[in-house]
Length: 238
Image (tube, rainbow, N blue to C red; front, side):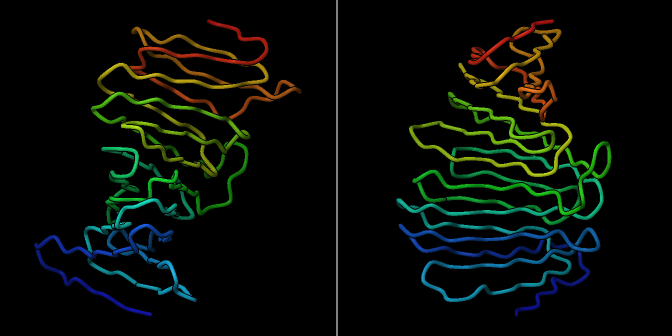
């Protein structure tokens, strides 16, 4: 275990955790009990056990996967309360994640073999209670997204841009918002059935997939999507 305290000063303190090039590394980030605290569990490729790093008065966490053809895993856990996750990818394998006012996580050079980013509600989600929200902003390039609603609180969003892919998995969320940003972006989803509420502007709306029993699954709000495709059964457009 490593304890790091950046001190109560006006400087922006940070920590860098490097991975192994061409291999599969893992970093778990857990938001702390106050806004300037967090814990990290790092497992570099080839290591037998995790290294725990406790942070206090630290502003930024940088996870550098070192690139190559590995499959890196970044898991970001919120607090037991209700959190807002903000995700800003700059490519399929680089970007920034913020959970409220906790230390931000910058990630870069993740493995090109579809690295995974898991966003996890650390509370106990239930109907209408302790559900987190996530806002994902697309890159400035052409992005292709694949949305899969898994349950009422879980889903996955695949991102492919520049010929490289990554997968965001969401656990314990009540709302998901995608702003695809610039360029000719696409969104594809496969459903049993779905309801699509069109937005006020072109390329915007909300997709709420339903299961075979008619139960609504985690909805996806979207905007700035130039082309959307819904595959599956009955789709009602409002």
